[in-house]
Length: 502
Image (tube, rainbow, N blue to C red):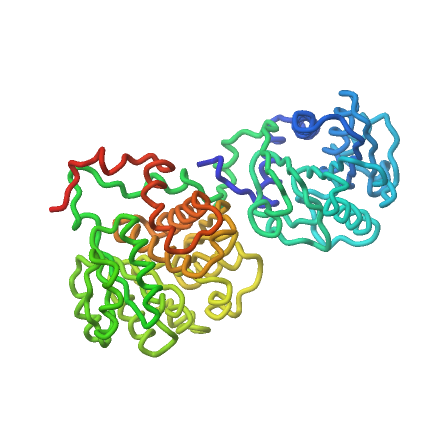
């Protein structure tokens, strides 16, 4: 799982310092970093007119190494520096001393006729918005890249992208490839930084993986290795009762509950009951003969339904409407020791009442807001997507799934994962209901809340990627069996026929 670790800018600096204190000179790390960048560039591109732009810090020092090594391989390389060589300090000064070519003062005109830009201006070390000549240079480079006249390769991070948040600090040049060191940073995964980074290549610069134990990071890229150990896979002794009994509270927009139910069942829930007003039950059951229908016309009836302790996971929200009834149903769901998923309107009914919601939480709970729902529920939180999701999880005492192209899953204990496998085809109505149902299905089988939420997000992304253009929400659950069999290594049902209904 170490390979999934995302290091903040501060944590990466700590990893460098631990390595240096352990006896590896900083200039050796810089030389190795520059060599991995130059080797990666030489392997991907034919020699072309190249400009290496260097900043006044260690990222600029990496750039001096890249420029020297590419020139030694016969490339036509020019170098420009923001500032003066005499002002460089430490390892950056040592790297610059080995460059025997001209060092041009930074100006946008240097981009004339350049085919490849090696962006080593600021990297992850940017602490403020870019301005002055650096802004002018990067703005022209950005325009040239967008016009197809220039290709940019970023060293560590596209200059202008915040390494912790992915936000653009004034201006940033889109890279076709970013070469970073040891581990990715959150800014590589969070938008818009993810889109600006291009292909992300992580290289080994001599930092030992065991430094992670000393740093103890808590942010990860969402991938199978993060949660596969907890994924519930049935065996020959499994039957429908051992695989959990999920409950969905259905509302007037019946399609939402039906999508969630399909997802929960395809994810493996042994039984699923859909609780809905009597007059809506025929709509919910029309295309789902395997769903148990429970007429529930008031909160008392819902409470009676949940008194059966075998019903161990509940979803409230999809298609419900924002009403006192929805809030009462959500409060009842939270009143027991069962796992709960709150989505959509079951979140909005607690708008600006985080303390009230938090006081109700006593068992594993997953909240799955999109940005608008999150802002209504947590109006006083500000910061990056990662920061606010983590703060919200701690504040409310539940796992937060802050949805989007870079969905963040955050746990109350500080762990967080950033998802990177969501294709644009997921941007269609109903996919949020499918996601909520997927979380429900995994929780009903006993999967821990953080791992269940992270797995559900990844499974939905994998299914959407497999389907491709034209995806609608109904398609997602039908692809889950193939994701489990092919991507997660499970056997087909036909090869596990000894597991049967009992």
